[in-house]
Amino acid sequence: MEKQLRVGILGLGVVGSGAVKVLAAQQEKIKEQTGVTISIVKALVRPTEDKKQFAEDYGLELTTELTDIIEDSSIEIVIELIGKVDPARQFIAAALEKGKHVVTANKDLIAQHGVELVEIAKKNQVSLFYEASVAGGIPILRTLTANYLADEITNIRGIVNGTTNYMLTKMLEEGTSYDEALSEAQKLGFAESDPTNDVDGIDAAYKMIILTQFAYGMDVSLADMEIQGIRGLSIKDVLQAQKFGYEIKLIGESVKTEDTVHVSVAPALVSKSHPLASIKYEYNGVFINSTGIGQSMFYGPGAGSLPTATSVISDVTVIAENIHAGITGPQFNEYRKPLQLTPPEKDMATYYLAGSFESTVTVEEITELLAAVEVDVIDSAEETQENRKRIVVLTSNINRLQMEAAEAVFVKHGTLERRMKVMEA
Image (tube, rainbow, N blue to C red):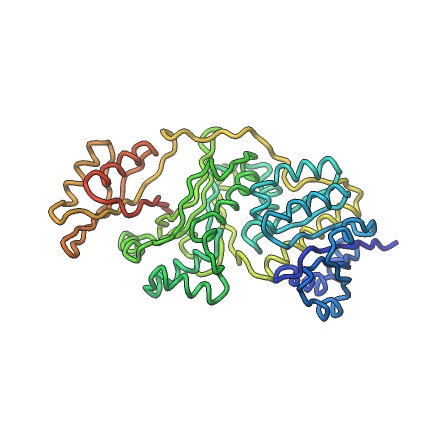
């Protein structure tokens, strides 16, 4: 007998509507592959929304009450696409407690409350899947759980925020200022009217929290991370990086050193020969180093209605396959290890430091001062403008304590304008 699977959806915004469309377009293919006919039958909308025509077109029953979905015993899966942390957390918890599988794209929620929600899912023997919460249409999370199961990841680095990557591309290729690039991103819908989470690195940080859970089994929080966005990034730094042979990207990274991890989000100089340097505009890319596979990169659209919706429906089909096979409530990621943060003396990197000084200060003097705190300079540049001198240096491979000593040199003798890590090929 053919299996029928009924789904309820919370939210019919851009992604929610996209999920309905994707499922409708691929329903026959999914039935052939899974043996299950999946139908979204009921949708939660705000009282002020007019979704009547859309509901008629796709055979949906609309409701403004959550209980109409979670109390419906015929609905086995709930898709949450309303966004924000609250009330989404309460809605998902309620659905799980009613024995319904849940699929979400809510990265903020999963990064902050994923552990507690997974425990609720386990208790009720249902699944909580969230592939679309990281890098939109790139199937990176399921890849980490399946393809890297027999491998050891040593670091995972990525461009995981399309807004900032779009802005940096405009600054690099067109010489656009930070403010101009942000304004254009907002006009195109890549950036919100309040772009804080994007430009200050918070959005990328949430995604790195999730990637770290999948790569190493460790639960980090924002307080455990170094987070720096691109707010106020100078076009001077973008152009100087080019002269040194690099492009500036907002890089999220999670690096394993022995049994410890260091997770950060910050602008970085990426070598032009590194695969991540080729990723432009709103696209995302995740680059993985591991002991078995070696180097690999996953590239694709990081957001958007159809890419994100496709990832959401892919999660739904996996749950459908599990139900059809009689598999009870597997979780997306069962890998757990105690959190151990890398101590500052073992966190190594090369750095770009830029500062403003009195015109009498020379790059040679700054180089000598840095050498006195055991920081070698491998490249440098200086430029005099309006009785001030801008000095930029690339350091040797140093630890965080040495980096802080180098910063102190800039602060003591001038003004530190920008510090960034350097990624080689």
